[in-house]
Length: 243
Image (cartoon, rainbow, N blue to C red; front, side, top):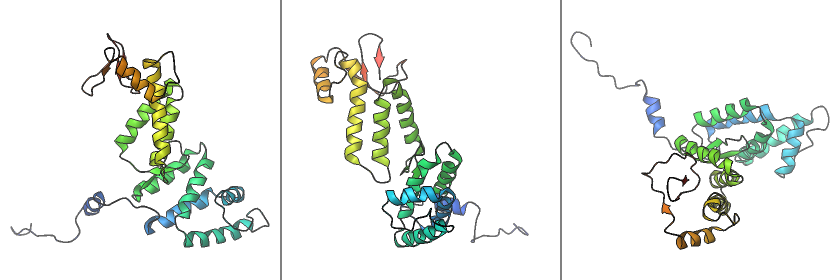
């Protein structure tokens, strides 16, 4: 305000960019603003041996990166040409490189930071073994809690993890996600509904539940129990509760 007069500002304003990005749709594949930082990450992780193994796995026809004093440079030049012709190959390279990072969480964290800042549709998996479709943090946290609780039940946690990765991986596998989810339910419910037959199928478990309907009661969302294990969903008579 100057001399009792308000100045109307119609240009740039603080927070304008954040407001625009809040409405921005995630970017699939490799958008232009992520191409250079992702390629830089790839180059940091590559060496002759890794490139040779990845080239074989991805069926890439490139010169032997382990041959000669400049073998890696020659192979990288050919790799750049292939990526320019097929940009999504960069995502395949990233997925093949992530397992090589092992316990080097800094590399995976740096990659996830780049993907998140660039609003990529992909995120680094919790086990750093590949990419997955980006989902709401709250949803992923709930699944991770369920998996952590299910780990106490043998293979249930493994089935849940496989189902999640199949459902939200960069290349989804709906059939595998469905099948592994069923196995997780069977593994969690069998000890409760069919303790004498721990390999009972879902159909068998449902049949037994119907036959013994008087013993069980469907777990309702409004009900809370002392048990914090969120795996199953049946209430036994008395105070015993198994989730």
